[in-house]
Image (cartoon, rainbow, N blue to C red; front, side, top):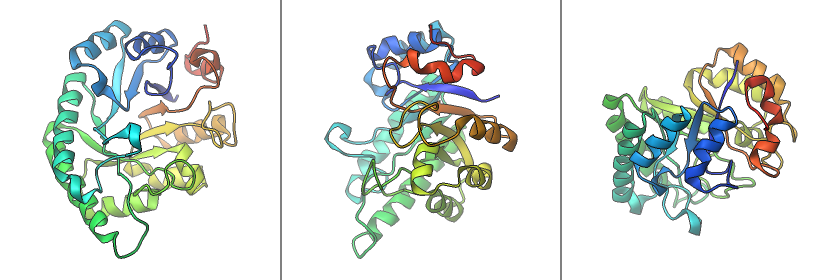
Length: 264
C-alpha cells in the first residue's frame, strides 16, 4: 500500500509552520517533507516530529533567493561556494532530523546554446562533489526534473531522461531520481511506463494533479490506477503530497481515506 508524506511547505499552510507538524499527524500522516526546514532550528523541529511520531523523509538544500525567483544553485557557475556551504547546512539538518534524502535544486539556466556549457559543467561538478560528501554519511542526493513549460521556465533539469543521463554519466550510487508525477506528466506523460522504466533510479516520489496542481482527486491523472501501478512495480518508498489544497488541507484529504488519512 502506498505511504504518504505531507509536504509542509504548501500543505497545512492555514497554520504557521511549527503547527503544521501536529496538523499533519492529526490527519494521519506518518511522515513529512520540507522544502525550507531552515526556518527553524533542528531541536525545535525534532521536538515537533517526536510529538507527532513523524519521520522527515526529504529536505531541500538551500536554494538561493526563492522569494525573488531563484530556483536552486546547483548549475550556477558564480555560486559554487554558496552551493557548497548550502550542502554543509543541509547535511547538518538531515543528520539531526534523521532524514536520508536531500534535494539539490537545479537552478535556472540559459536555453541550449553557447552560454549553456558552463552551466552544464557546473551542474555535474556540483552534483558529483555533493554526492561524495553525502555518501559516507548514508545520505542520498536527489535530482528532481521540474517542468519548464508552465511552472518554472528556464529550469535546468526538466525531464527524467536528462536526469538519468547525468546520473549514468556521473556513476554515483547515492545520486537518485526524485520522480514528481506532476512535472513528469506535463513534460513527458506516459506515467506508468515511464515510472516502471525509471524505477531502479527512483529514490522519492511526489504527487499533484495537473493542470492546477491540486489534490489527487481533481485533475487529469487517474491516481487510483497510478498508485496501484506504483505498488505493482515494487516501489516501497514514500510518496510526498506536494499539491496546492483547494481550501483547508484536511478538508481535501478524502482521496486518502483508504490509505489512513482523515478529513476530521
